[in-house]
Image (cartoon, rainbow, N blue to C red; front, side, top):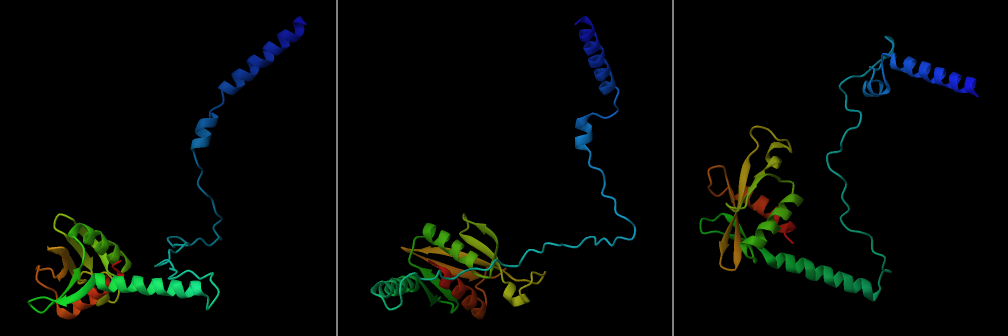
Length: 197
């Protein structure tokens, strides 16, 4: 029994001394990553994006109906859709200002109109560059005028919300804080009006 204890003590000491003299421990080995080596004849493509990100995610406009065609429930669904689209049209209307430029009137107070216009702008092709709730303004890029590309000449417009009683006027201003051109105002405000919910 004494010999067995002596042999175990010698083996344990030898093992510990051998492990202590090793130049690398497991932590430094685990933290270092060796470079990937390839042979010289292997073609390597550098700087290319192998996983391109699509420009826009496909969107589903309407989910398919589970109701049988021609049933009373389908007629009811169509009726509610018509009522919702009618309420959207009456809530935001395009009008002419005193200067003759188009303005949009929303039948909401400015705080509610602010959030609705912001959500509507996110659904339009006009990119929100900046927003300032204290100035009641969204700044948008009109990329349609530069073939859907952002360049130095891409115009920036200010979508300004102005309170008028119980409703809010939405006015499109150019970089000089003057009403934008009539056709541009008509195009951008119509896009916002169609998406206001």
